[in-house]
Image 1 (spheres, one colour):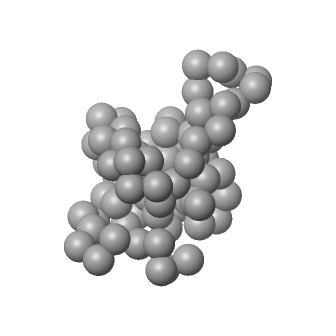
Image 2 (cartoon, rainbow, N blue to C red):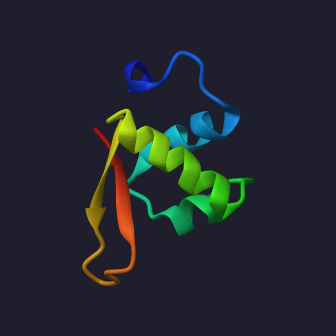
Amino acid sequence: MASNRPKRASNCTKEVLTLLETAPQTSKSLENQSRYKGRTIRLVLKKLLDAKVVRRIPNFEDLRQYYYILN
């Protein structure tokens, strides 16, 4: 799904998109699998949501979290 990737993306954005290609992830699982801090991951996810590259679906097991998935 490389066509969804922004042309000028930060390294963190590229890593988040690569991780999301495998399966839906929570922000916490993305933080655990990457080398970036949670605040950076959440900022990238917000930008990707605004650009409609990813969407979020509620985690029905823990309603405080969302799963992020590529559009």
